[in-house]
Length: 616
Image 1: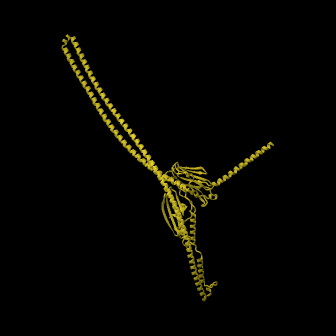
Image 2 (image 1 turned 90 degrees about the horizontal axis):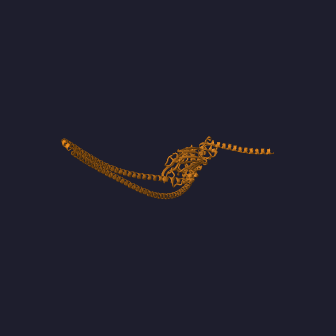
Image 3 (image 1 turned 180 degrees about the vertical axis):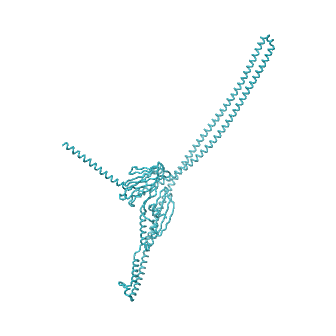
């Protein structure tokens, strides 16, 4: 019993796991089939370029492709991109650069499988980034600037016009405000750069003058120092020459004195020899006298030499004192000069600091004045814009009212004209009918007269009693009567329909093409929305010939008038085609921030419509 219970449990567990893994297997098989089915569909190709307002593409510029919220590809430092998008996913193309407002385009590739298998035409768009500036609300750019998805009405990928209309005004206002602030910032920077350059030039000129003055003073000081040094050297040289002369004179005198003494000594020795005898007698007395005389002479010579040495040392001492005094005076002069230079440098430094302080104060006041002026100008500009917007809105309402009244008047006039034409046509038909009836009666009368004559049987009609020629004439008259009885169709404008005899099929075909073309262009076609032109390659055109060619083929004459004018930051080209008293108005609006829009009869149109219908 215990063994059988364990077997049952194991069987149940195995059954449970097998069922679970079978479910996983079939789910994986289903998803792999779905994935392979998606991968087999042609990719939706989008391409274009990134532009930087007042900047350039560098490594900070980045284009990211996100699929279902995850980044799948990143392009850095390049302006062009080319992505192949798989079907049934949501993509986000994000354009960014440091210091610039980021933008994104959302692309939904969900489409019916039978249509996706055929493939879609490549889609091109361009996005321009502008610099981040204070005072502009850029939160709006957290959402995509445009959405591209499958449009059932055109059976193709195109812009979501409902989304574009919902965010168009906010994006346009933020972009225009940013571009105006960027332009103002650029002008302010240029003005500040000019002011700085002027201040730097002035400071450089003052520094140059100061350096030239200091160099002049330095050279003057050097010149004076050289003169003082030359004077000192001259005085030292004079003192040295005087000392040498004094020493030479003292040596000469000492030499002469020694020679004199030597001469006297020799003379004394001669006298002593001559008086040798006397000296021998008086040797002791003479010896003593001689010794006394020599001692006295030596003493006097010693005293004289000492006196001369003393005088020489005194002269040297005085010369040294004079030299020390001169050096002290030179040192004092040098110290006084350095002190004067230091004082002058200190005063110049204080003066420069004071001037710098005054300049900064002047700059601060100038900035405050400029900020005040800019605030006043901005307030005035905002007031002007509000006034212009109000005036434009009033003018728009007035123009719409006048246009409505004009169209109503035209409609009533057309109805009146149609009634008048219908009455005139009815009268004309009645007149023709009477004429034809009279003619028929006349023919009947002639035929009756002809019957009364003797006509061979072979010339009579067995059915009517008329001859073959008369019967032919009668048939033609009946044909004309039936033709005239057919109701004529009005032109739809103010004239009768112009018909081309013998070329009816060609005329009808041209009109059908014209109607198809005009009907195709009634589809709401929105441009990229903001900073991009609608540049799309759709393959073959909706029609092979332009509206002007179709009008010519239909035999409708038309007149083309082109006008150009500017409104604020907008440049507008207006083209009016007039035919059969009807007008078709085309407009091309180029915004100052780069956006280009095309309109036909007040509705958004494509670049293709503008080029094929409005352009000559």
